[in-house]
Amino acid sequence: MASASIQADGLGLRFLFDRYQRAVTPALARLRRGGTETWGVHDLAFAIDPGEGVALVGPSGSGKTTVLRLIAGVLEPDAGRLDVRGRVGALLSTEAGLHGLLTGRENAELLGVLAGMSRAQAEGALDEIRHGTRLEDAFDRPVLSYSEGMKARLGFAVADHTQPDILVLDEVHEALDHEFRQIVAERADAARRAGGIVVAAGHDHPLLATFCGRALWLQDGRVVADGPFDEVRRAYLQEGAG
Image (cartoon, rainbow, N blue to C red):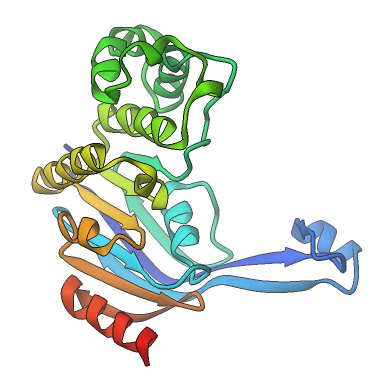
């Protein structure tokens, strides 16, 4: 596993809307006068080193998913700097990259190729990925018939098989049943112990605590606190109860 690191300095990302509150590009925003802009995250600064598991905590809309998408390269920052070193494996949505009319096997091969594997490598990995999904015969059925938890199993199994240096998990792992949640937690902790980085967001704090020793508390797109998981979680919950 290569040496992984994440460094953010003054990181910001904004969303632009037209007067009908539809998301638009900067060029369209200039043409459609009367629109607004909202900063999803603003002036973030943090560093994550090899072997760290970091949880993003905070209320819905606080910027957790935006940060994960920036790390995964799905979004590009509008301000500041984000330096991500290492191969990223991300599970950001149960629907991400999946085609409903294709089987789980066909989707796994496609996702593997998109993740950087050759077609031969992706084909050769299918039996192991199938075992990792625990989907049994459903692996050869169209994904259109899958539950959200089954889709999350498939996406995680592919992301895990690519052996990323940085594993990014959004709240989709919370759609999983108890057994597979524990599998995800074990695999994430193993990746961290091997010198990788895990960054995860969610509201299941006991689950996050099994592989994250540190937490970033986000509020309105800004970092409120950064420190040991238990301390940050306690402060966040006390603030919410106050």
